[in-house]
Length: 359
Image 1 (cartoon, one colour):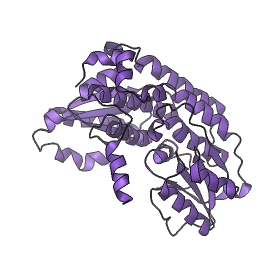
Image 2 (spheres, rainbow, N blue to C red):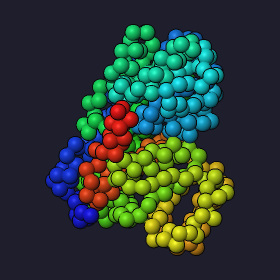
Image 3 (tube, one colour):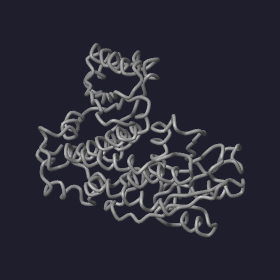
Image 4 (cartoon, helix red, strand yellow):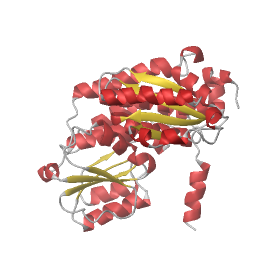
């Protein structure tokens, strides 16, 4: 394990973070700004605005934007939105379905197969990608698509191009008439990101930095991200980043579902009290019942002598809070990688698995 001081030293960080993931985190706002502008030039035919369901064909980081949309905009979405991380689409897909092919690289074989299947089924099709065969497919068929340059993601890892993937999908849904996203909401997200940097960046010393402090607490623990309602999608992202960036086992759990079974599983093994660390995400925008559930669940954790850290989000809208938590997850997972003496960008086991599948 590296000494804590590495978190306050850009020079030491650069020796371990050789692919500059820090640059990708620091440029999240620039990613959002770029993709928001790019999406404004994408136009949908009127028929797209009358679809009855949406299917997003995407894997891993390319589906994270949809996870956020499903929970943040649950009350605004008038039709079902489904993620399909597979080669084939459900049988219900037809001319009343909008299928969005989402692949950061544009080369994801499952996504390419899914959009080809969508074409056979006569579905409406759109896409979001940085290029590759998916961009070629969209251009060849004259489908609406956001094709973006990865300028502000220097580490080139799709999971760290979250401004592109998350806000890109939000903007695409807006252009399709499925969501109403205003310039004011966009500006508020940009303010949220900027504010988070002032609290969590490398230049903020550990004793005043909530992400560094959480990362230090997480060393040697199994973090469990606990959230509810509009933050479920970002809790998923948070846990994924802890897995891939920090090379740490982590999962996310959702209130109120957690209260119906998981609490009984805290007793054993006895090592739970020393191994687990709950990241408890509280929000004044939760239903009052769920706010109370969070507090009571923390009492249950205390009774089992399981450590937890509560984070009460402060931004005023669901979308802003989603990005507030997203920034905490990005910085925390990054700092934990450094404390674990890991280069955060490479994902050797995922790469090995993919290579074995091709044999």
